Image 1: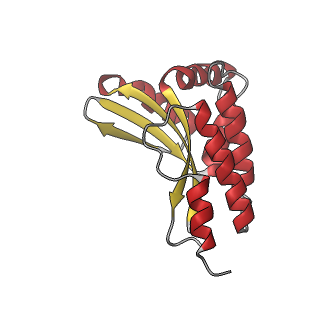
Image 2 (image 1 turned 45 degrees about the horizontal axis):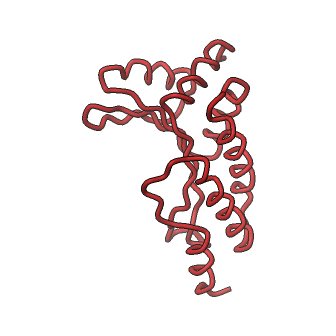
Image 3 (image 1 turned 90 degrees about the vertical axis):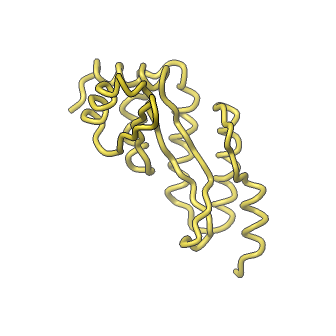
Length: 153
């Protein structure tokens, strides 16, 4: 059980040193060849990794990576990200639009069954990008549409 105070602290950390990431990724092993990936990351200098350990202990799941002087705690997957965002939703301030949009996208992405649904969700991800700074975005809804046109029905 996470207390309201702990949820508020995690929300504040997400607002300041976190990211809510939605990506379109290629997946050769998927029938539609693309996946909508959802993740939440918290960033901290490696010397302060203790707070990431604490958040991980409260949230559960995910993993902590060490990269040079930085460390990050990443939670990946619809169920885990949805649960985390619902926990902090009432307390998030700066990233409230991202939380709302991410929850809507995850809800739709969990039920993708055909090409038109995948394209619709990919377009939602394209719109989500306007809420985040994305310096390495590779795949857009347009590319998904073009690639799906070449797949057999």
